[in-house]
Amino acid sequence: MTDEIARGLEGVTVAETRLSSIDGDEGELIIGGFPLAELAGNATFEETVFLLREDRLPDEGELASFRADLASRRGIEPETRETLRAAAQRELPAMDALRMGVAAANLGDDAGESGDPETDSLTAIAVLPTIVATYWRCRQGAEPVEPRTDLGHAANYLYMLEGEVPDDAAVRGLETYLNGVVDHGLNASTFTARCIVSTESDVFSAVTGAVGALKGPLHGGAPGPVLDMLLDIHESGDPAAAVHERLDAGERLMGFGHRVYSVRDPRAAVLSEAAESFYADAGNADFFESAREAERVGAEALAEHRPDLNLETNVEFYTAVLLHGIGIPRELFTATFGVARVGGWTSHCLEQLSDNKIVRPRARYVGDEGREWTAVGER
Ligand code: COA
Image (cartoon, rainbow, N blue to C red; front, side, top):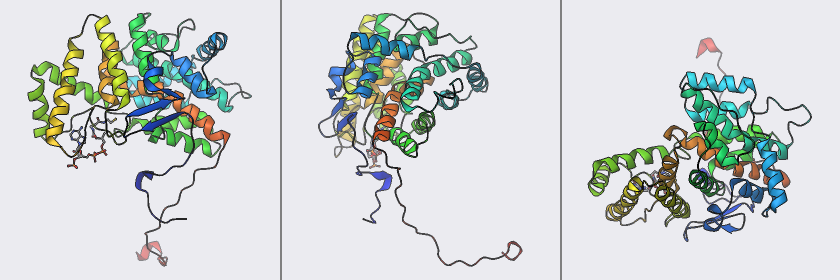
């Protein structure tokens, strides 16, 4: 056993997974055996979740019953709704509301059913959109919209946010986003979820912890600031000048660079294509074109600024463009990331439990030794 410290567990392999694979040098992401570009724009979110759970695509009958099962689990208890209302009234951030909502999400379970990881993970996936939308409606001073079981997962999320059935283009855009970010190796929130179930704790606890990890600005918090930057650049009318101004002021260009990818993040390509087709469909290509120009001048400026690095767009860049176009409020970007990633978190929980070993790394002690106790009055 080595005593070498792997800060942040960088480079340490702690599990086998069949859920996703990342090649940071080649810019490739595989989800459940499919190259991302093959899956994201074609699948519904339900098909992707089924794929992660079962390691194959469902046939028509299986898909219909899986969709119905998920849809039947969308409701939340009145007490959970009141918690979300209180969070909204106090203007707590969406991720805090999501954490509270998930923690209370099994309030309505029968004693016999609660605790089964397969069932709990389906409920967790089904209920996250309801929690986010309920919080958001309360934040807007509107009444929450009850989920509909006849709509797909993505369509129902938009319906609960807006109170109107969304058009097909918005639903397709959101499905592509949800599929595109559903899983991404052992990122911090996914590892958190696996750690929690490795103690044989329950899936709701794992998802609650994962939401807490996702909230941090080093993990799920970037798309909001990306949107702010892109709106500034759009309004400035001179993208190149706006980009240089930021860099000269010592600021980072949001949505560029990635810890794992040394080339363009493959999710940026998939989401860029989805955003392009969404904005074209909506007859409102202006903001998309401006974002694309920001990407071009941003990459050029970064190449001058840091010729030693290859800083290209990451997932958050086109997440901001796409979600903004679809009408997801900026305040809900990270929570919507959670709505997608819960598909990955829960599949990792099941994978961890199928071959479980409690996560228990070691720390090297660097404190004092041999101290002698002094009574409080004598210190
Ligand atoms: N704009 C300007 N400079 C950047 C940059 C960016 N987007 N990304 C990295 N750099 C520079 C840093 O300033 C740093 O310079 P230094 O060596 O002089 O300190 C150098 O590149 C290395 O940055 P570091 O943060 O150590 O690299 P990392 O691989 O750990 O960073 C990110 C990855 C994503 C945190 C980083 O690229 C970043 O902050 N990007 C902007 C925020 C963002 O888009 N986050 C979403 C990530 S999905």
